[in-house]
Length: 177
Image 1 (cartoon, rainbow, N blue to C red):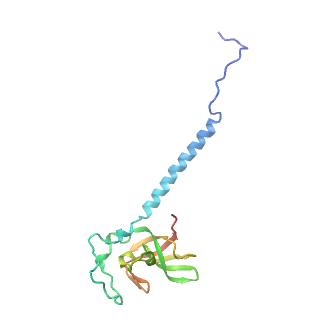
Image 2 (tube, rainbow, N blue to C red; image 1 turned 30 degrees about the vertical axis):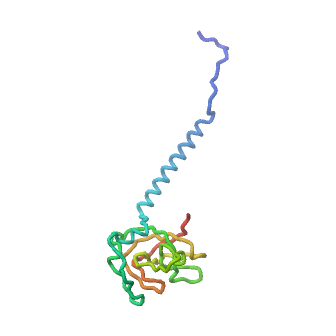
Image 3 (cartoon, rainbow, N blue to C red; image 1 turned 90 degrees about the vertical axis):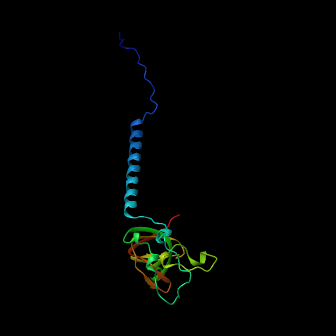
């Protein structure tokens, strides 16, 4: 039996705006999924090898260092498995072609020579000659950069060193820690 003018008891709602809260959670969740998909596409586009991956596992440096005036890159010292792969490699730049603070070509290396306390020279398989698609504005050349592009087993001889690899039409950006 129902009474007509009897007050009804309303249960308190824990989240009075649950619909907007639910919509917000749904939007955040979809955003995360889209972010993961974008990261997966970037990782499909470029591989990020370590510098040691540029050295074949079976290769050993020569016991007697070749004459520095003689330009020679041992083809056995280059990792052929990387040929024509899209890579993204961090390192330090040694500008080769530049005007003012705009760099168009540089050598990418794992570390700068002044960061080591002993006499050290980089092997050609640890140097990548980078030709940028567009010049990069560089205010501090001692900061690390990312270089992205298609790697080729192509040697280049410069005053700064002999390189074993080349990235052409590359993109460079500041390395963020």
